[in-house]
Image (cartoon, rainbow, N blue to C red; front, side, top):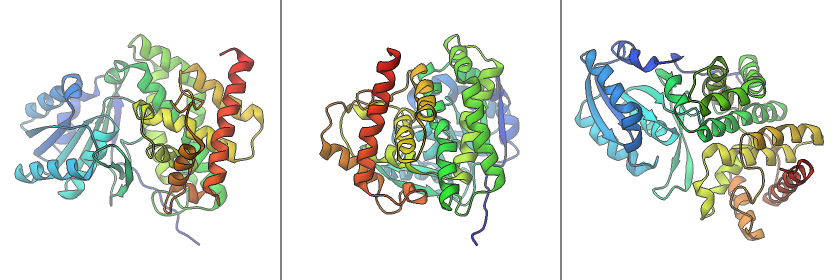
Length: 369
């Protein structure tokens, strides 16, 4: 019988203006830091992080992130961190910045501090990074011996981000229970390496429950740049509940299909991670045995948040069968997460992609969307 494994960050802090307290948390971790952020995020939050750190007499090396979580970028920043003798690596920004920070921290055997500026993915809490080529093609997962030491989420910053990012995070989080449930039912392993714990199952289920309850209210809150109880709930669901739920609960087909999309060129790469996962989730639901009411429950939420549900929505309206097979083949390569939940072929996945597209088109026609 396989071991049950549950992993999580050492500390998670969330709240309005939470970033103002980051220095007090980091000083207990280390005194030499590297702060990584892209050009846009430096103005949104990076400079504030540096200011708070310096107020606690913490040494800071500022690094501009080049935009891709690639081996090249990880190595470049690792060299900077080594030269600065930094023991704490702080990533500020979106998923690729945070994944790069985790990788650099692993390279220097340091501590990891994560400061997400959107609630658009569940990357912040995990002990893994998604690594891409310099051109943005998915290459694989990189796993670490521990989760981040501190995850700090400032909901005032999250509320100031475009609503599209929150919607993307909701889509990513909505895959959590769908995938974890399939892994549990199949007896597969989680991203943490063992079987799902009761705790992880409960967290994944609560994640989905929270999303269906508060997604719309939180989405409207962000439109007015307001921090509300509904937004706080969705930020926690998108970040903490989804993060713990996917990592200790398991990934199935939805994220494998997302990864498959990176095999194609074109406008699909302008979509966010969560937007591609939304379609991948519909494909997974199609691969399973669900009623029309259950599948349309997800489609309804996606459509109401402006998320893509058809091939046309994800810029693949004119994709050939060969193109769809490329996606399906990439999603079913050896080692992909789809195998934790399904015994399936690429042809089965391609059929499910077309069927999911048709289900969503039929829903839109029925509801005049």
